[in-house]
Image 1 (cartoon, rainbow over the protein chains, first blue to last red):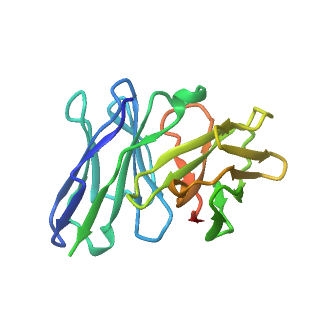
Image 2: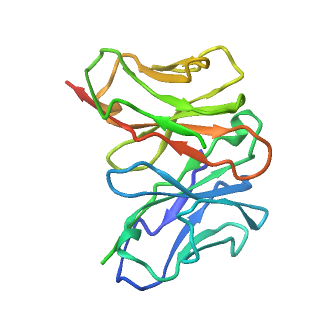
Length: 117
Length: 117
């Protein structure tokens, strides 16, 4: 069964460094998402992406964050200058469509655990 | 804005017994989707079950079923014949069905389910 994959599974970085989190969505999916989960807290939406542009973003997704689909398979989240409070689990998700029954269900990757020291 | 509330931070069930996890939500929309996701200790988000708001029939997936009460804005998850592998965090999530790209998921705070052998 197709699945969303994410790399790396764990990332440790120093405050102020740039990190790039990578995701490979399910191949026929057109909508991509990033969520994050700070330890012990609820999962929070960061951004959605469709047709090579951001569709929607939350207040968390400030100028330090950017997303890109550099090729036909990868979807990346970049944090330009990491802060301690960026430490969290970052989940990538994808869906086939944005509406229409099962086609809009979002499937999640296994997450990247980011630790900022 | 939509909100999702899970009032039970922790629940416990004996193996082979039945347990119900509660979820309420607040929305002014009439068409939307509701989901239950499972997050085991690995922290991967796994889709358990989904429900379309326009469907009166409650969704079922093997041992998992929901009680969807649209007027009450309630969406509970029933797990029958609980197994040790069901032990996890369970998140209720809401998604608008409005047209356009990038409809995000709004998550509740989660319920930690423990299964006793």
